[in-house]
Image (cartoon, rainbow, N blue to C red; front, side, top):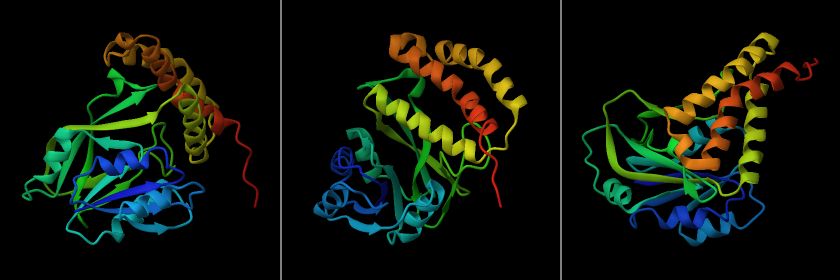
Length: 247
């Protein structure tokens, strides 16, 4: 079994991800020309390291999956880590299916958020039996928010995948700005779509606050609920005001 990890300047997160894996699991790191010590840390952990210029998330993930040589592949982000239960579940997973879903909880400023808890993600797959598809949150054609898809039988593993994507508000703002710009580049400009997304944002926020429990997380939850609700509108407005392409 091999853990396939995409990296770029992940020296802060990668050691935690690597030490959370089962001891016998091989590691493949596909690095997008990091400027920090990411590659050094990966090599020190006996990972196979491939350095390759960045293209996009779907292409990079597909390339990494194709480079795995073991019968099973576990897809892991550099800012994720396995809890003890999930680590044991992966190590002893039966091989009677083609893939396994894990449940992920995302942390914001050091604490888990209810609205980002128990997200089901296909991450452990029989090598060669899964493909990567983009699922941009606001629509469009951007190669972003990639997911694995497996046509064969799929099970689910106990435990939790811990996602430490936003250690600070600044990191959240930076990623929000970058991802909305990437999605906007893959969306057709439409002022009508931008207006509609803006009008529906308050209703989306209420849904996140009430149905998904963000209101119970206090100011952190309210902040994320509001900006998550606004995400499609921000993408649509960026697309609407994007400079036209020229031949």
